[in-house]
Length: 240
Image (cartoon, rainbow, N blue to C red; front, side, top):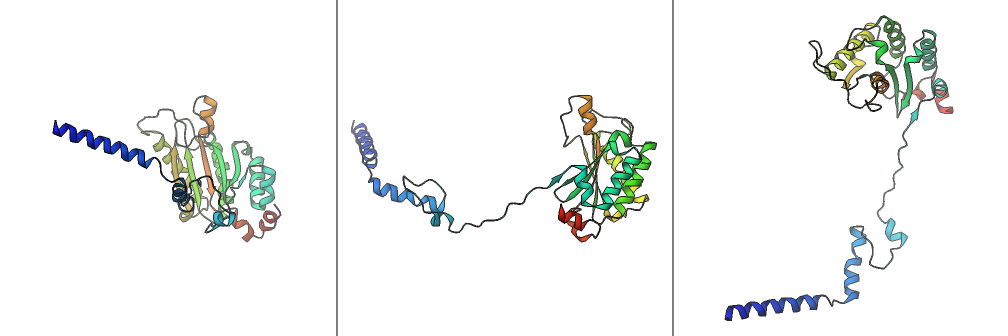
């Protein structure tokens, strides 16, 4: 009985402490939590913070704007060599299978993979010879690193030659890089990326969408930034 009485007294004391704490001075309570906006960024308790206090220690940096140019007419104005490349592709009937765009500072030449290779094959089609010859002639005159990016669809692939889509993409990339090197692009400038079914443009839910995802991208890194350094394209780029 004595132990039970002690327990009840302790519980009673605990509840009394809770009640006493719930009747804290509101002014003290506000001052205590009012300090948090300056250190943790929480809202002030019913007050306001002056603009000078808000901006104290704030470092404002300009936001870098992303650059994306896909219009062919605008791209032709950027660079005479690029304009000649597009003209040569149209003259060889290869322009329809290539899409040119500028993403950030890189020039991206997106090629339909079915024009270069057969189905589930890494051997170049005869029609790809002329296309790669024109691209190599252009790339050889442009400085900077040249990335060869190969993409496939998500069709389950497992053959004696290709264990999966990533192997197929890597072999195709090696073939393209070898052709560019044979046609004058230094090996030190070439870099290969085999993405396989990763990073599709559209969902692989229809034959048309899968065909769009099968592509090869020739990417010239830093191409846009170097336009001002080139006499042939700097003036046009500045006006653009």
